[in-house]
Image (cartoon, rainbow, N blue to C red; front, side):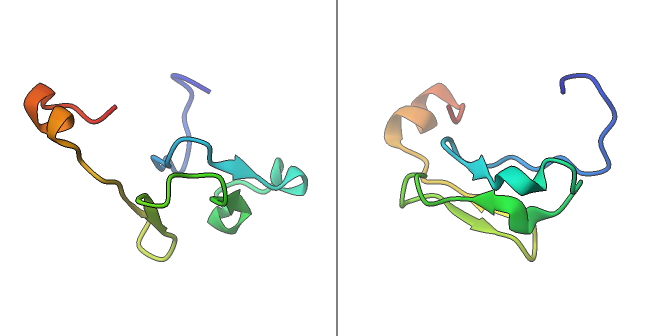
Length: 65
């Protein structure tokens, strides 16, 4: 929901999904499914940090796509 207030915003890897029954459980990071994500991307639920590989192209462009 762009431009709407959220108590929590977390960047997650591409292809992250959510369990269907969790649509109404706000801010529950345990609802996220990472099975289809790139295996170089790691999401630390406890600290709410995403670790994603930065490629040489990302470095050159100075942006992570």
